[in-house]
Image (cartoon, rainbow, N blue to C red; front, side):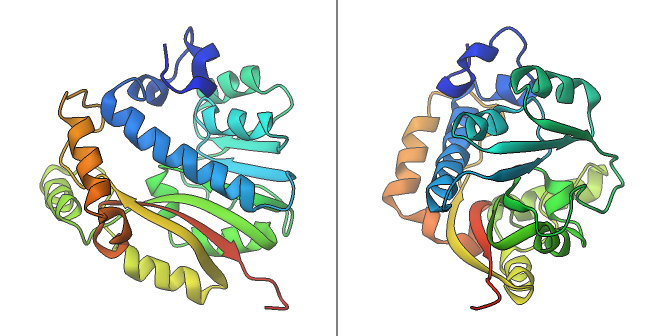
Length: 240
């Protein structure tokens, strides 16, 4: 059974990342993302249209749908998109291609945009401009970024260069954020995490100790050097 209470009803057809959320490390990263999504919900004037990129089975979209949001859900995987539609019958589910460079929605129509743990999109050279295009003024992005300028990032980047695997840490967050700010956004919230070297699906008994240590040391505030960063960014109003 998934530890995330919002996903409790999904125990019979869990997707990959819902299974990962069963682990101690997965529960830790899941809770940080969930808190950021709830914070963005609280910052919004009222639930309207939210679009999630890389929805997988729809756990975050289901959370927002239950809070009153009209969901647009996109993914490159038809099967997980079917699962999402089953869980959220009212959602507009859109299958996209891995090489697409557009968000499949009209200009100035989205109030909340999620790109949570979808590295190929958030690292792309088109994401920031497309996010600005589809969001209404004062609309929000909730994103997770993998930071090259971190011990974890440097190690993973070097490993990827030798193995040919996907490089989750090829860009420094501070430089990417500068591009985001220069494109008409402001940062409302950011938190760094994943400082300690546990694997993505680790179930080590030491994880609670190190995650508490991370908080006590205030490492989450050091976003320029954090391995992972969750953030909320807002498209500036034309009157700002």
